[in-house]
Image (cartoon, rainbow over all chains, first blue to last red; front, side, top):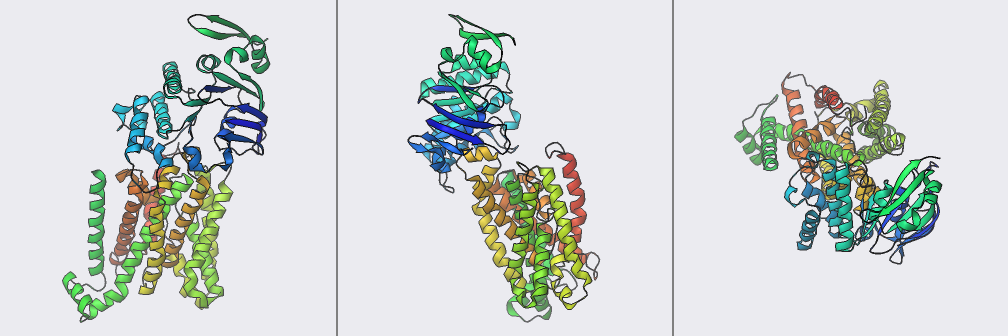
Length: 257
Length: 326
């Protein structure tokens, strides 16, 4: 995927993108980071057709994103949104079945391929045994896995996740990130996600895109992007960056000077 | 299982109330006598029932079904469990515009359903655009709808004080009394109503997708804006035609889908057909009770519905206070 000088503005001035040029590499985990209101989610929105840029273009497989029909794009790219709502009586299996809609005619019942995709998604997210359970009876982390399972059932080569770990307990955060890594390594999915936690971004990403005030400041591997100098530039904080064999590279904020 | 039982029970009830309604009232006829009279045409009482009571029964059922399904669709589109064509002014908009047009052009009486739909669309557009503030807040929508409803109801009622001949002939669109319904009414409502009900079945998958958030539905490949417009048009069509023929009845679209959801769940595949049956049952029962309890005086079904519906709305507001942003 490519982004060429993409500019986007809502009516309110706050979340804007300004001439963002970037590329998403196939088969990699790319994470978008940056302060609140820097345009992270908007960037994800432009890439997934939720926001149509005023100028510039986002291109997927040689075709501009807005030129895709919604269903066509939904077969290439699945999105897990930050906050989700569903009817209170819906079960895991029913919700995951929604993921097959881009592949199905409106009124035809699901075929073998649909069943296989649903099984695969449930299996990967560890929900096979809980398919009849209602979402309202599950914890936040489990519910997030159901939404991921729905996106996986779309069987797309690309998966987007908007702040998937926000609102989750530590255990579920890492459980989710491990799942995402597995999807990438074992199943070859191209992952693009927005993360808040920098150490998680460093640990689980191949590449980082750094947004600030609607502009793309930096892009590259974590070792290149996260330095004492850039952290000051981006977040205005003093950090120490360390690395050891067990943890890999990590960052500790020290102060705001 | 629960679904099957609910469907079976509602069908039996509907059948039972229909038989009861056919045989009771100012003329009482036995069921077998009635069927015999209807088939062979040798019974005067049966003829009266055929000309006066049967159309009334059909109109009650069709209006009830149309209004209930219209409510279910509106709730899906607005993501608002409180949306009801009557409460948010679609019905009164439909009623007012049709009364206005027929008063100005009395010869165009048979175009009334079309004028009604135009009025319904007008009211819906007003509610939708006036309550849109980067999204639809259920409570704001309801308040705007109540204001629009009051305006159109007032405008409609102002015709009552003109004291001309037109009033008596078009009054039905405002006050809703099912007496004097003819087979012509049944034809009009049957035609437009069936089209609306059939279309509502076609958009069931869209309604289900809209029950997730817009952005999720979009990610699943739904053209959200188009789905919204199509579903809204069907909902407005149903409510407007029901109003044009059956008159202004509030709360059916609020009460029925809510109870239906409790019984058979929120999947529109079951919800929409069930709402249609339950709506038909409710209005037919209300009308039949209304014309028998204090006979020979009649209580219009719309008044019975207002009396039941008001407290029900209060109940829903109390219960769902948090999620409706109150």
